[in-house]
Length: 96
Picture 1 (tube, rainbow, N blue to C red):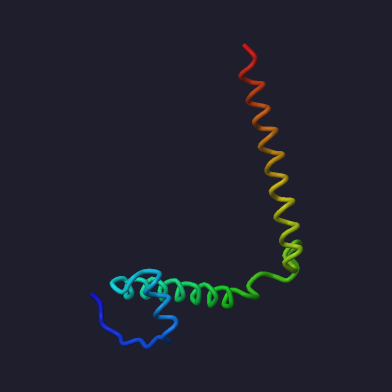
Picture 2 (tube, rainbow, N blue to C red):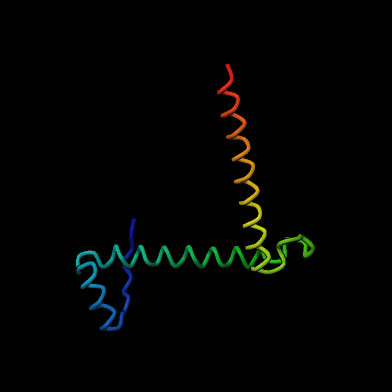
């Protein structure tokens, strides 16, 4: 079910909206844009609520640079492990 809401937009914004989606799709486009914005606001609120839940002494999670370095190292270890596993299985299938 849908209710009507009167929304006032600046002339330039309405003109650009009409050029992008046409007058017949205004409501659909605005509803989708509002959904996306509300989702972002919920995500921000959840991140803010979660801030501080982790202990401060977790290595690699001190600041964004540490997180990036930790993630890169973790991915590299995964690549190395998968390469060894693949090599192991390739060797195992080569032997009669």
